[in-house]
Figure 1 (cartoon, rainbow, N blue to C red):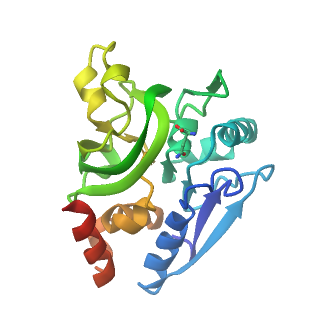
Figure 2 (figure 1 turned 90 degrees about the horizontal axis):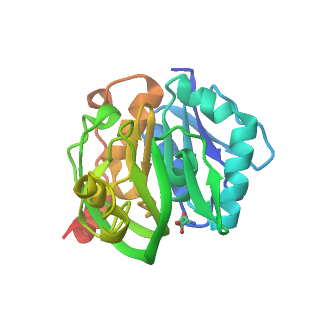
Amino acid sequence: MADQLTIGLVLPDVLGTYGDDGNALVLRQRARMRGFEAEILPIKLGDAVPEDLDVYCLGGGEDTAQILAAEHLIADGGLTRAAWAGRPILGVCAGLQVLGESFRAGGRVIDGLGLIDATTVSLQTRAIGEITSTPTRAGLTADLTEPLTGFENHLGATLLGPGAEPLGRVTRGIGNCDVAASADVSDGTRQRFAEGAVQGSVIATYMHGPVLARNPQLADLLLARAMGVALGELEPLEIAVVDKLRLERLK
Ligand code: GLN
């Protein structure tokens, strides 16, 4: 790891509607509480995305805004090169959809970055509410043991291809897609209970909250990857208020 951890906050001006900027704050704070220097680098629409940052966070956004995000990130190429180099990337909701192969917005099918083998179509009814899931422990997330909690608010129905695994198996809420959206595919049950995606160094989810505030183990997993250490090597942090929040949200 470099002397200082740099957290890329990708397009907060267009993917900043749902409070997901908080994920970068959580990563910075959890690094600092352990005595590491950490800074957030906001990367705005039109800015080049540096390909050598330690970790990247993309948040949720409105349909029109996420079209702008996808177009810019594809044209720029920096985030794609960072993924190819194995740098950890967290995408939330619109961030998940933009990192996939394609999504629907503004009545059109829009190309995503193709970093996740996922296609997003539309739900019949917007999914809004609390969501919980059990980690699948796929790929990069093999060390996750704690249940995941968040808040979902989306109209996108995301179907995963064979290249991506779900982040969690839904125990409450909708997740990637509903019964109707998963009805026509051969692996409908896998799709119906899927939440988020894991592929290479990319972790994506529909969970707002912000997700890293509600799921400290997931935050530390990203932090550990960013620092090039194992999750178990990070000194544990006791934060009573986070434990209390999780107890309340997971009951
Ligand atoms: N606009 C997208 C949808 O409704 C993403 C929403 C979000 O990021 N919360 O599916």
